[in-house]
Image (cartoon, rainbow, N blue to C red):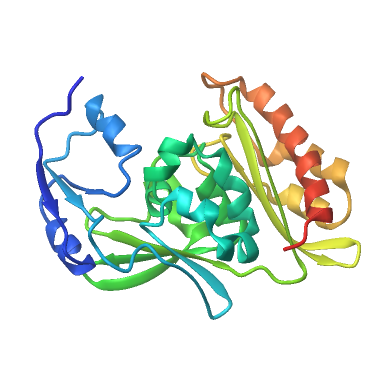
Length: 280
């Protein structure tokens, strides 16, 4: 199929993009790896595409005030190669090779993945696991939203129709930071049947501040809070058992809910080992 007719405008700045988004049925175009597919299937029929690729300053990666800031237009491939991300945000570095295929990572953007909020995508779960935040620009100026408050429902976020996502930030890894990542997919590059992004802080042989963010098991990334508490108490099998309460994955084309819950436990055992062994 071909897309329905639409108008096109190239934004000169973030402020100009916000101005253009005042039009009815306007959508932001960044990497386009999700949007173009939905356009071609006519699942999306915007009246105007606002191209933000020409806006300067949205493609940087920098350490600022104990955080790593990743601009919205940073391509997945750029993040995958970044020494700053590898050193200071190793969870994101670990997730990058699992995102699609090289052609997709060459065009897809970090901001686009967060804004699209596919519940089976890797980066939203990483942002939750790291306790990150999202910068948004809108008609009333700039605002910051915590990751835990950003994802509202299926493909639904704190973004309004007139907002532009400009950057994400996550705490820079310290000497006591621990990370783990795993996913199970039918083929490499496919969306995961179940995935898990995790972070913690080490205190001797124990883990504190455990955050377990599952993806592919609900309409948004899912925190497994009872499993977090059990894992922080050193009880791995109790943490796995707690997933029966924490997660209620629906049946889908990938697997049944029961299979997904079993795979969630498999991943927790694997990722728990990574948390005990990883170093930034």
